[in-house]
Image (cartoon, rainbow, N blue to C red; front, side, top):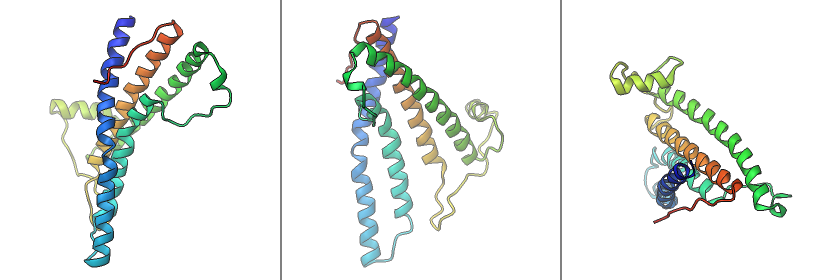
Length: 194
């Protein structure tokens, strides 16, 4: 069982580490978009796309960087008593709290699936069966949702990125749970970042 958990942890951590390192450069993408927005408003005609594109870039940066943040332990914690606890007690507490995180991420993932299905023109209340139907060819993409701004971009790409990010965060939370279980048993599951 520990071998299977260690393999899962190694694969998920490696994928999320690499994606997180790439997402760090997303900050420069946002800076470039906002810089162009400032330049175009000052010297040229204002661009319609810059504000909304900066928002989409921020969503991508934040959501896709989430699994990396969980993996590095850089999320915010309330540390009144935790730092004085033994590693075994910390592992028990972390295992319990990560289960709550897994539940929360599962709800976000399911809600994101529903929202993405809606943006693809699905009006029903079974988003999982809709996406399975898209894969098998029994469902079709309907009228695509667009933003109500003057630029009017399609919304489904950013929603799909959010769903993918929630999925990766869910996988990383399960990885952290496996690490906590190993710590409770007095073992350590290593992380490969090659």
